[in-house]
Amino acid sequence: MKSTSGFILALEGPDSFAIILWGSKTQRAVSRSTTEAEFVALSAALFGEAISLLAVCQRVIDPRLILKCFEDNQAVLAIIAKGYSPKLKHFAKFQRINCSEYMRSLFSRGYPHSVHPD
Image 1 (cartoon, rainbow, N blue to C red):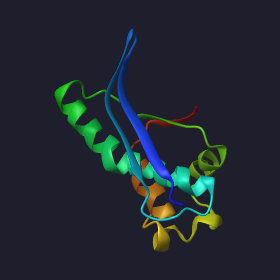
Image 2: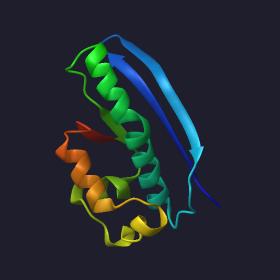
Image 3: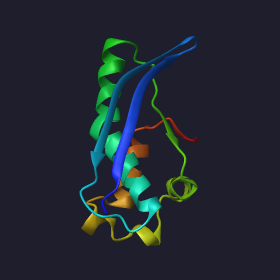
Image 4: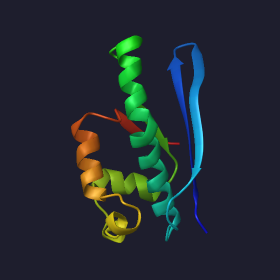
């Protein structure tokens, strides 16, 4: 059974919180584990929506805006911290995500500013 990716993008200020985009989509391939499904969902949200919307908001609103990601899966957070997981080496073939390239490109550009446990 295919997993469903979901995300919410919001602008948050000291006294405000406004949802500006949300989405839900069935993943392209069946995930082998919850960690894999969560990693696919995170990458889809970041590369599919968040990074491009951040660039627009930085041009229109304030160039100092930062992107904060919240992830509740501890295994995904560990993979992000290490930058690689041998259990996810099949990503490039089945999910079309190269895990090490994903990490390198994401953090070399400075986003997200940080990934927070939920």
